Image (cartoon, rainbow, N blue to C red; front, side, top):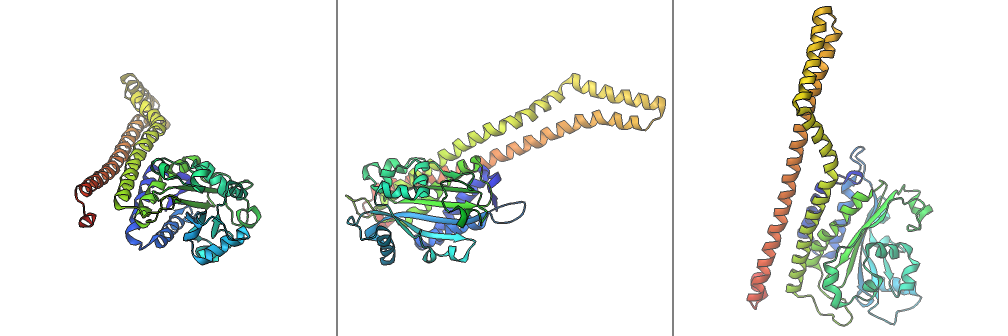
Length: 383
C-alpha cells in the first residue's frame, strides 16, 4: 500500500513498474483500463490506519463519435439534443471505473459521465472539471478537439502537468459538492494523462479522502509515461481527420522508445530534485557529525565526564555518575546517527542506480529491435 501523504521516488518507481506489468495480463484496452483503475483503488491508502484512501478512480479516453458503440452514441445524442453533423467529433469516453459504491464499479451504471461529446470549446467550458483538467495539464483545448497529426510526435514527447485539487471541499473545480465531495469525505483530487501516437488523449482521475500534497502530485505526473507504455500495444486506429490509417508497428516502437527515454530522463531529474530536498536534513546531520569529530570537542566532552567522575570520587554521590555518562552518550550517539544516515543514503543511491540501469537496458533493446526492423522488409519475422 502506498501512502499519498508520503509518496516517495521509490514508490513512484514501484507503481510505474506494476502498471507496465499489467500490459502482459490484459487482452484488450478495456481489460487493461479496468486493471489500471483497480490497481490505484486497491493500492493507495493510509499506512497508519490501513484504510484505502481512494474513493473513486476513473479512466477516460477520447474517441471520434463514429467509432463509439450505439449506446454511447445515443448518450452523446441526448446531451447534444440531436445527432452531430460532424461524425469525427471527439468524445471523452469512460473506459473504466472503480469506487467505494457498487454502482461506481461499472461504466454501465454511470449516468452523466459515460461519454462526454467535445463539440466545441464553449461546450467544454460548461463541464468545468474537464475543462480545468485539460487546462492544468497544459495539453491545449485545440489539441483535444482537433488533434493535428503534424504535432502528434511533439505532443507524445511532451511532459504534461498534473491535475491537482489539494482542497476538494469548496473547490469550484469539483461541482458536485453536496452529492459527492462532502458525503464521501473527499479531501483532494489528482489526475494525469497524455497523448498517444494515434491522437487519443487518455486521462486518469483519482478522488481521495486523503489530502494529497504538491510533492506527491509532481511525482504522479511521471506515472503517465508508464500508463502510456502499457496502452501502446492496444491502440491501433488513428483518429486524425485527415489520416485514419492504422498505426504501423514501426510507429508504435518509435513511440515506445521515445517514452522509455522520457522515463529515463524523469528518473534522472526526479533523483536530482530528491537529492536537493534531502540534502538539507542530511547536511545538518553531517555537519553535526563532523563537529563531534573535532578533537577539541571530543576532548571537552571527555574532560567533563572525567570531572564528574572526580566529583563522585570526592563526594560518593551517585547522581554525579549519571552526569558523567551524559557527555559520553552524546559523543557516541552522534557518531552512531551519522553512520546510520550514511548507510541509508548509500542504500537509496544503489536502488536508484538499479532502476536507471533497468530502464536504460530496455531502451537499448528496443533501439536494436527497431534497427533490425529497418533492415528486414518483413516485420513479422521479428514478432
